[in-house]
Amino acid sequence: MTYPDDFDGPEILRDFVPYLTHRIGTLMDQTIDPDLKELDISLEMWRVLFILSQVGPHNLVALAKSTSVKTSTLSRLVGRMVKRGYVSRSRSETDNRTVDVAILPAGQEIVDVLMPRAMEIREMATQDFLPEELPVLTSYLRRLHQTLVKNGSETSDERPARRSG
Image: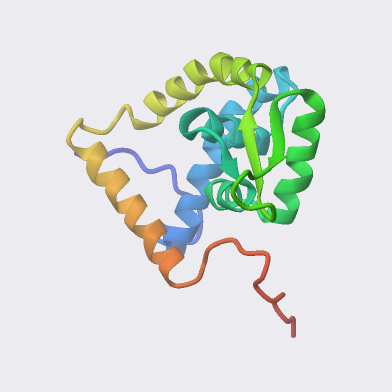
């Protein structure tokens, strides 16, 4: 089965995976953005709330990896979310150096409001795939992610800054 191709960029980008994944991610983000604005939350806040609602409390470092946000940036974001009453932040009971983040009822309410819209967007984005194609697609995307992580491409606060020139 073939589909119309609205690609209008340079031919080299047609099959360039970083370009394609960026375009897909951007379109998905733009699709849910009006819903986020209506609730006065950022995309990063939504990701944090969604992950915490699915897996429960997370330490800050693990949450940074799950959200692809640097730990220092995420720490500031979590601080804003604490002030809004969406999450709690506390020292770990097992390791005093670790900060745990948990979703609060106000944060869960946001997830409950946005989740149907997120599922609707997922369905819309994948509507042209056959049911047996979706597991293959997600498997390939997970493998791509695992390969990048294995080769040191994970977001890290410790990575030295790139030199220009």
